[in-house]
Length: 113
Length: 112
Image (cartoon, rainbow over all chains, first blue to last red; front, side, top):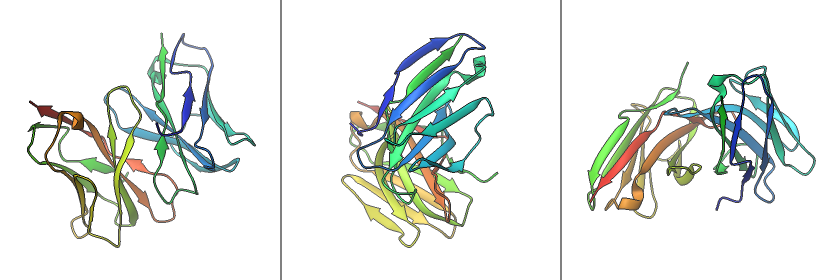
């Protein structure tokens, strides 16, 4: 158990809809990262937050947004969903700003029909 | 763009043999490298890491080798066990960056 909690584990929705994925980092970790893993693909970096502030942005679509709250949990919002958004979405956390190991959650599997 | 990549997408190994998983990286400015293992239905788990000022690091049954001259990273697993069957990812962090950039992964299958 990495200590990173993601909910929901599975989510099935329709095209055009909006979903929110939630992540609770390990106790004490200030950084939260979001990654997307499509079928048979590697992990694509989406966005990072550090202590409530956006720190780095990757190939995140404009339809996607995220935030980190004062209690350090994070949410990833995916809107106007398309079939191609079906993927595993992983949250990871680290103690600092990104100089070491990331601890990953079990992921949220999103299926868009 | 620059990315971390693995030489082979799949690797089949006999139980008890040693496994070597290779990874080529293209960014000479990377200062930190890490190997993750991802079992089916789970999130990536840390295996071992190495900083660019080292060329070898050993863990329990695993060794990571870093060759900066040819920008090559490898993971050696000694006495491979059925529980080692998984997808293995190498990842790198660029100097001044905060995120890890992942390669495509190598699927390791252990034959009994």
